Image (cartoon, protein in one colour):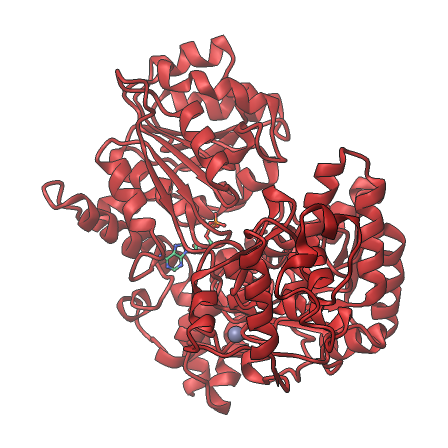
Length: 636
Ligand code: ADP
Ligand code: ZN
């Protein structure tokens, strides 16, 4: 395969082919070859999550749908097969910013990649096409509407297209909220390129959406079943420390938090444009480098803020949730919500913008009663049918359950997405458990009434039965005749609500959102009934107001001693300079983790430098000398 120089970019002078040096044995098992590329080009030692499975499927010529949380490393799943296959890989991506980011990172790693898109001039696009046509490019990034023109397809049909990757593949499904009409045309791809496997990638896809994506993108066998492997990776992001606190004096809470993390990049989410500007001013007045970012700002102002955020450490973006869609910065160290987000899905997505590089990061959310009232009225006023509104209210309940979780917050978050984990030791509750009150007796009463009513009613009806009310809905279903009717008068309505939410959060009940939020018993509830488990709850429903101290973040990296920490800072400085020189964000040069490893290992020769985590052969060639200079200077 041919790699070429691209003198037009500031990124690189000669791009050499890293694969030529890697000495890949074509007779070795596919995954072994893939590992050689992972190590040689990216400088990583092992695959993460289920990357290996996705890569294997593609290398075997099968289609694959990879559903992986943001930051898990979806790109590697198609980039490595692209390099091993040779020929041309097409990458369809909806956002120019995402494309440009990946192309930049690939070029720096020595891979011949480029993109044809609307932000480039006609001449640039023509030049890129020439490279495609002459076989010089390995990966071509292109927007769906450009790809699916008859002319483009006819031209590509003459080229050795070996693989097609569809990024943000959920955009093809009408089930999801992000449907894009220009993605629909992609259903025809498998007819045009019957011999190229398709890699579909997404971070957000429930089961219905997954099936829809596979149906639309993958060719069918003679039984009409779509052909391809669906690989779903865990949604846990263990490196993000989770925290939630009641909003007391939010300005102080926010300032304490950001001041303790001055040299870190962060995102602060606010609900309104006006609020983002207010918060930005407030942070700036207090010496924090903050920028407001929302859709109402002038495009150039926004672009400037974004550029600062991408390139410098210690910049805080104060944004409405519209921010972050096209932002692919792996070293965001924290996401701070000044208000309750819309629901669990939104929350998971928003905090997922922290720590994409896998290094320790934090998510802190403030919430208060006025948030809850406001969210409820949003739902009531947004229109839509009553069923829809009821579902949204239940979704909000699930989020409140998360905020009030009496036990491990991560367990509460993941159980909402159908995953079970042990207590995480990296959330505010695990690290600083709240005082709990035994609620086993109340829990038994709830289980009894849920069973007695066939697991088909919501929390309100359960509470009204336990408290002995006799309104119309109680009588209509004969619920006043149940043994448990009136058995819970001693507990207040508010306490019952809190107990139910906390039992949802701890996985004893499931809220059946499709079914008007009916409470369903889980297997864990059965263990309560047998007495194998007890249930304890937080009586202080709204949680302790104290924000957790900025303890040293839990890290799987060994700690640096003071001297090494100095070296680390010097290496960061070197990275900043290189980033400026190459006009790329710092993390594209090396991640913090790579610098950390460097500070520990202190390589002083090029071969040793290659052993550092995250150093591939191309980056070794480009950057080894600069960093070795720093290390030698430090060693004296
Ligand atoms: P996603 O598209 O899933 O959000 P990316 O493909 O942008 O994630 O990858 C996120 C980060 O993780 C990138 O910096 C990437 O280089 C890094 N990464 C990918 N795979 C690995 C791996 N196996 N080991 C370590 N880091 C990895
Ligand atoms: Zn935890």
